[in-house]
Length: 443
Image 1 (cartoon, rainbow, N blue to C red):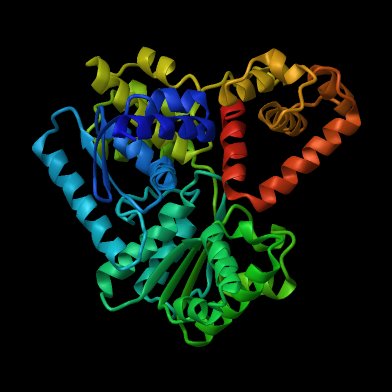
Image 2 (cartoon, helix red, strand yellow):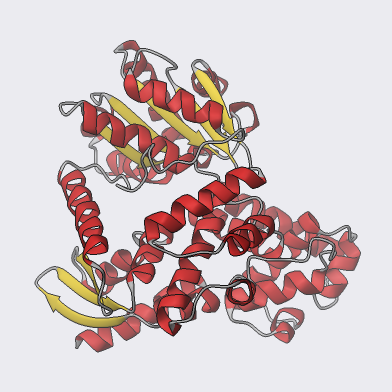
């Protein structure tokens, strides 16, 4: 296959995974340039595309290409527009740091540092605890358990601990993993009889960072291995840092003894940022990205995107990309247009029809597809998700929700909600997709 054919197939898979809206905006403009040995070079219109993809889908393109090519690949993005020398230097510095970390098997985002973390009343306690842990790993607050909603900065904060420890303690063995990756390694180790290698990898580190621990729910063998790993590291006075979207007592389907290990150090929560903190975050991110914003635009964005820092930053990247592509200055009118997906009328009630429209747009379906009696996988899952979201976000009865979905009965709605809940507890990517839809419907 030619590189163009490979990339066309990759795009089809990517569109299925991210939905048509995100695909058309961020992935369709990418062009394939070269495949040389195990390196694939892709061209993006400007640095904002590169940054957005690396922040929101850091491994998706790699995974798709590796599956099609049948071997590991290194991905390189070439920016088609000319950049200022200082931006090139900054990009090169981050890329070099990322490469150095990867060479040691550490896959931390090099941009997630304490210097780039904006502190305010909503996250001050968690930030102070994280800084204390990074200064004296294993000596205070062990384990440190950080929890908060989607997009509030948990991954940034625990990554900042790792980056700070790596910079100040060069001989430290640091390991950062998602709970999904940990689960996959446990399953693989058991299947291939390599449990001793797994224990050696995880029980001899100086700092273990585990992201999104809630996804170990219902995974008995993973919980067992995690329990003994935490015990071993704690006895050796090695630092453990854990993040979750909820406090330990609300993580269901985990053993009591594992839940007690989560709770035996310090638990710190991150709340949604208040207006002043949102303004500070926008200013900080805009300065980092060299995006020029008038105060009225900053205040408009901060007043409209209220609950999710990731969406604040994603909105800024989108504005930067639009301004770079069109050459137009960023004003409130552009912000309203470009950020319309993030902005909802606060007074407007959420309806089943609005949820259906959002789900259909995300999956590239027509409204009549979901309301029809089709039971194909392409339609059945989006329909179940729409039922689940309608139950979560509207005051409608189960019967009313079913009627709006093409005349389904209340039992079908109950079954759909259970199916979605089960899938959420077992599949991290599915859970993130639900969170994305939730924030599209109700920012």
